[in-house]
Image (cartoon, rainbow, N blue to C red):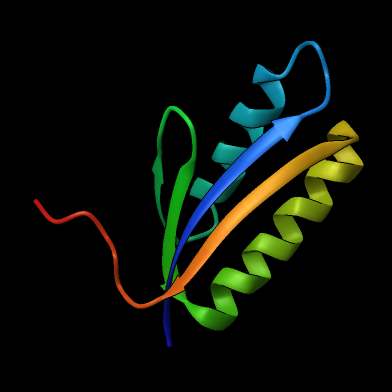
Length: 83
């Protein structure tokens, strides 16, 4: 099953940009199809892999940077941008 995910991360820190940049870099190294945007990052891939990457990345973020709020919209199906 293919998933389309829109993920936003809101670090609860004054210097919020470094954690967001690090999160996007980590997602880009995951092997999933990733499209960073100004307000959220879109992720696309097979269900098990997407959910594993989401879980691992959020845990890593909490351990590395502390408190953050994550908002995810998860949809079954392929909503990748088309050229």
